[in-house]
Length: 208
Image (cartoon, rainbow, N blue to C red; front, side):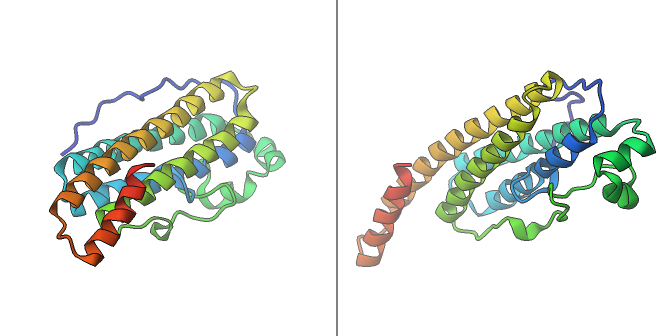
């Protein structure tokens, strides 16, 4: 059970609408490396984790990603609030507007709708953690790309910069969790050829 704290992790107060930037930033809401995918990925994968500490990390980060979804949605909402029909048409936001008006709907910047096929949960602790490490780096790259567009807009840049920094922290935490999980697995494995090979692979991931 979650307790909802009615505040964002970082304040957002955008005073000037910009539908063009909204169409880019929305990718981190429902895009292939966005916050919706991250949250569902980690909150689904936690059930297969045999290490309770690692499962707790997935729960913590998956929960924080829900807040990041809220932040991205708030940015998009404030960037598109009170747009005139002329501004909507001139910015290329008209296609989105026809389907969703000014509502928030999960999609990538290219218009591809959110899909759970963009994330995976295979039930293997090391496989899932390795995907999580990659997911955080892909999200960080997407934020890097967004920052190149919003650097001259301080009201947008600051919360986006904050979100990017959290992706780096998440990557570090998953790296620590991966090492813990690898350590536990290596202790319980039987010294068979297959186990030794698997342990060697796991230890390679542990050194990331």
